[in-house]
Length: 113
Image 1 (tube, rainbow, N blue to C red):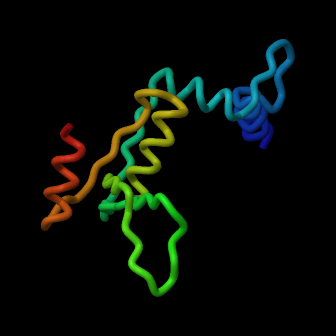
Image 2: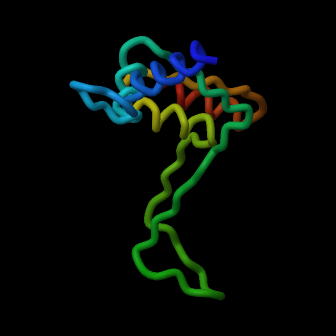
């Protein structure tokens, strides 16, 4: 039991909960660890093909509304996780998708650019 307690206290100290001379928050510790050596593979079993329509004037109900521009991109939870992690700690994450059908071809083409 004493050994277990020492292990928990040691883990807390490494995460910044209890330090004497240096004070690190848990997020600082995690960021240092990710940027140092950890690599994360985010699995995206169902990548999404997303479109964003931009309109010059407010959209009117029961009327024809024409988009001024259309932006297409690859999205999905796996893609979002990898993007967020790489913004937080560059080079820390990659994404793996299962690709199939027309959407899969588009996703592969977009990600290869």
